[in-house]
Length: 210
Image (cartoon, rainbow, N blue to C red):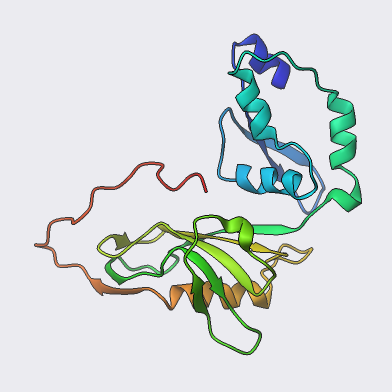
């Protein structure tokens, strides 16, 4: 796939999305994204955590007129080693309720904490999610803010945390449900006034990259 992109003149980062049939084990190609994507941050931080070179730096090299060689087989073998695997979760929080309202309160972007026996609370304002220390913390990137609108399917924000939110059967863990309800509880909204003009213009693709 990468060789075909090169023949077409594309240089740089790309990602492939696959769909796995959990019943049959069949693997299907979903789509090809010839760009940096929303999942790129997770892919790159895993490499950096173990002292390796993230793929994004290879993308930069492609546009810096630097000659370099890379052993693809050796790189893939190293990244496949169990000791080099790390568990992170990136979770896109969407509006699932069938209501459309204007947001009057929204959680801030930054690090939030959820102690085992406590409620969700804001811990510190940062823009770098790499400082998440353990599974009791998560970085929240707010997408829908005060004055904007929540509607079925709308992206409210993105959570990044250590560990997993799903089990091997692809079911949400209680931990995940706790974070979902905790973040949603930070939002407040009011029904729309049909005579009220929109307060904000949407920002297309402004939320795609962490």
